[in-house]
Amino acid sequence: MLYRLQSCLKYFAFLGLVPWTNNCRPCQCFQKIYSLFLITINLMIFSVEIEIPLKDSLLLSQLVSTIVFIAKIVCMTVILLQMMCQYKGYYILCKEFKRLRERFEVQLKMGALAYPRERYIKIVMLGMASLGTLGCLIYTSFIASLIYFWSSFVALIIIRLQCVLLLLYVDLMGFHVQLLGKRIQDVLHCHSMGGGNCIPDGNCKQLCSLEFLLELKQSHMQLFELFSHFNDLFGWSILSIFVVMFMDGTVNVYWTQQVLAGVYGLVYLNATLSFSVPSLALILAFCRSGEYCKWQNMLIGSHVRALAYNPSPHQTKEPAYTELLTEFTMQVEHNVLAINAEGFMLIDNSLLMSMFAAMVTYLIILMQFSAA
Image (tube, rainbow, N blue to C red; front, side, top):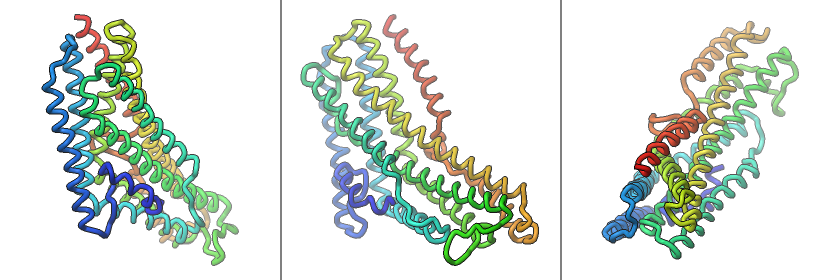
């Protein structure tokens, strides 16, 4: 499915987020030079802007602004550099999606698969909303002074669009995990019916056969390899994005409190909300997608254990089936289908709650310093 989307996703190459082509090496070299140009020009603009004296007399606000916008530029640099070094790995990921889809359609007899349209719409709308808020930031920057805004404008676009792309990839993986879980549930239902007339295709291959269980086991291993490749390909990008989103959300909630307290004018309220709301929304959506993958993996584990611990008469007649099912159970237990950032953190609801708890702690510290 991701392979089919390349005709649309390749336009993200203008921001260095995906490779433009897989075959033209001169084009890839040019794109690497272009990505380096984006990094360099942003660093140059920031180095010039940081030398401009600021009118704001609040030292804490100046310090926080500098740290946040430096973090955004560093995050953009990590995203572009990681993709520059992984053009080949990106197309391998696309081919893995394609092979997995073909396995589901042919070996698992699931017919033609289509990614649900409502999921596309949700991700597209989230991306458009995150970019739409940039209009409020541009408007505020013209009528008031936003510290270091223009030097990090491109970085902000790249970070938000990369987050939307990652959300698409994770949602696609969650969709495939869901499909595999449904197929294993069909096998469990077939066994509970005594291995009767559960025929998935015209060749009369039964769901409770040894060959079909082997296909399910291999499909799960292929899914695990897909998750592992994704984590290796985008691990540092995910980590840097979450750090920046966390800082962005925390600091801009603090600035919103400062505006409401009368420290800054109300004109800055649009800017603070335009920074914080999209950051928190993208974090929420990403964690929810990671939690969905984790939950579907737990369902697969429960279905496989149910097959192993409640054998049908068909299983007791075939020792090879029981042995394969035992191996499948151990595989599901050890090869967890989850999103992580180079092993630093699991992307799920527990991370979301940890971030919110840390956000409240840092907000209290910032308010105490500002009141001092």
